[in-house]
Length: 300
Image (cartoon, rainbow, N blue to C red):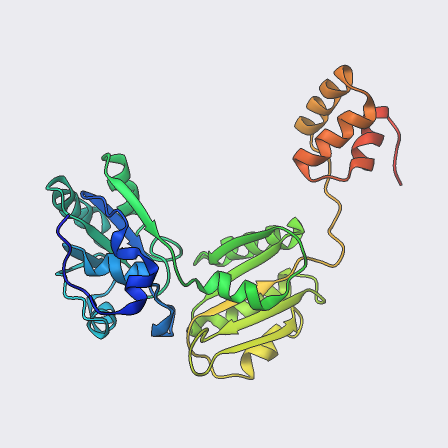
């Protein structure tokens, strides 16, 4: 391909070797951009964006200053939650001509609690290649500084709008035994903090991260019971990441009927201890409980 000039004398571009990497034509590049600190953009993201025939942006007014900072001058298309299907057809036309188009959101990774999922899905369904270009993420940034228990975590993102559905989602998360990651906007953080306090065990640890990577970055630890007060104590600004830790002792899960059926099927072919070990590996349930269920012993 004929490469567009871009920092030809920059030693970082040369050392990274990014300019020598393949850049397939007729593909949509889903490019992560900084979540606050402009220096968090990757060399690969800069190179890819500099080579695009067009860049689809959640809000061109937000993306234009970032692109201008790095001397990237590709034409911009608006691709927000209200026009994803329409702009997908427009981008498909570009890709069908062998052009390269990037998709960016205002911050972080498109299609992850941001617009873009329907657009990406439509283009993938139409047979176009999708190339991820990963980068900064508020979720992984918060998790890396949270020090959560070594347990699975569930990403909820932004909660549903309806009060009943929000309560249902939070109650299910509290009962799961997993850590839970919730995103929230500053104008709703107070109400969400109160809902989390009501749904979770009061002692559950919560990490409140806001303004990540920015000048006024704040990462504080509190509990579910104290979360409303912790949130109220600071100025509501920027997007929040709430990392609700797993309980110190995970709640005991019931052995559902389907698990019991194939547990007994395994037990018919294998020694009970081996069958219970395999079932524990697949389900995450304690091996001893599964063994007891298999041999008909009651625990309690």
